[in-house]
Length: 113
Length: 115
Image (cartoon, rainbow over all chains, first blue to last red; front, side):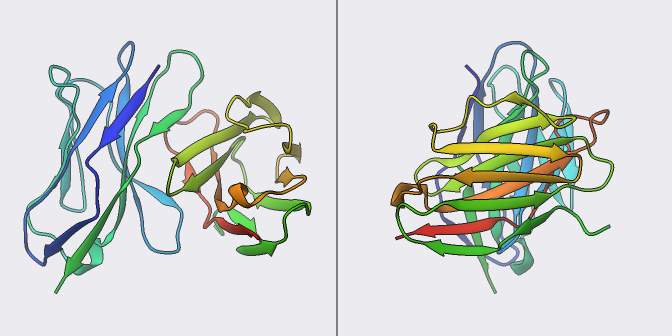
């Protein structure tokens, strides 16, 4: 079945550092890939998405490229801020079968000033 | 728009008691999802509804769990009897049925503690 594997956390960085959170997936067919973010005390919010191979999703300075050859969708940001501290979830969705999302375990990111 | 509303935000109960979690989806959304989040298992989909009808309940852990959606603006998740291993954060999410299926809007969650 479909699955998502994320880089284990927690991840702690200093402000303005470069961020990478790794995500790889296993899926049948041609899934869409997403990153969701969960701020403290809140529900998940869609951060960015890519619906086909080589697509790049971007939002709020974050980027991720859908790499079919390596089955990856790594999240990157060039210069993180304290306000980026949150839990980040990689997710996969497929039109095959039930239209539901499969989430990775989540990576907790803490940015220190 | 008020967003997805969940109640209560926190629930502490004793083992064996019945627990009912409530969700009000965003007005106009006709799909609703219940998730459970734990440290050990991450975020799991329990059940989802389209137009008030349960479509996939394969994630419901066991018969102690049940979910209903009597109308388009209300859903409940019930645990009877509750057990300590049910302690988790339970999220409700909704989406417009005709929209991209991944554009789910999450509520703030209910943190359940079973002692």
